[in-house]
Image (tube, rainbow, N blue to C red; front, side):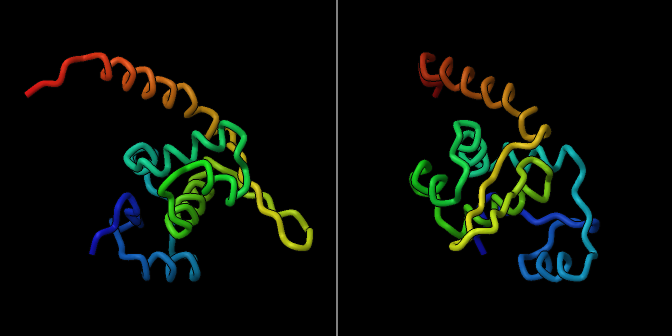
Length: 133
């Protein structure tokens, strides 16, 4: 089963999707170590793109999906839930009809901004280097 950048963590290691739902429902869940969170966040192109879009001011799920070509609704929702669970984004639901949901960076999420800028700088430098064979 292919599971691009949707690695699930629990106290005892990686678990399949259906166990994540069970663990969340019944409370047998703990966050991974900070290093594992960073690996999960930085190791997934979709997570980085979601963070960049939220940084630019895209706050609603529809805006995020339009701003990130190729991002499916399923992957977007999984990444948003994970970023909220990690404390990187906060989810705000407005009591309106129809319901409106917005995502914002938390202080933890804002602390990733310099790292994302550095990734962009390195990528720009690599664009000017000759390919290695």
